[in-house]
Length: 168
Image (tube, rainbow, N blue to C red; front, top):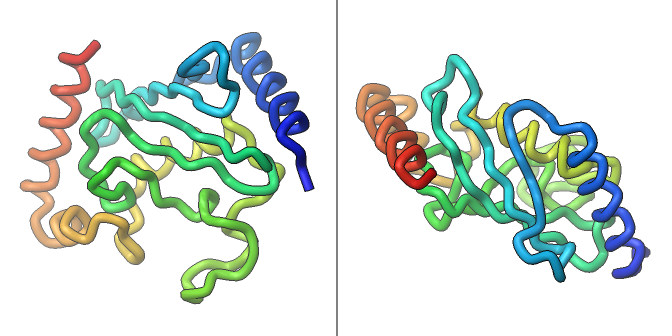
């Protein structure tokens, strides 16, 4: 079992690696310099998607036993997406606790694994923005709109993109 100090060391290393080798599509840093377990992340809306041009802020909160358990990621920017709860919390397989899915929707191999890093998590979120999963939605209204009223969905996402730009 990972201790808090092991988690701190790993998070320090991941932060240092991201500072040394930034990844296209997002930036990440500490929310508060005194707390390695709370990160501020800005995701740039991926090109050729409805989210293109947006700057979406999120908070990534790591548990004390990271990497044995996944962090949570919550958008603080307005977000309209089938895989994001109304409170901004991101719902993707790799952020679900390791092991078998009690609901039987996901394979254990699709869920959290300690090999994931901040980079792999954010890249998965960018992928989620590009390809929503409406089969198992966190936001049922957004999923329904995505499937049945694509024009309304696009308008709401455009408004989120515009608002994110105004916040910069």
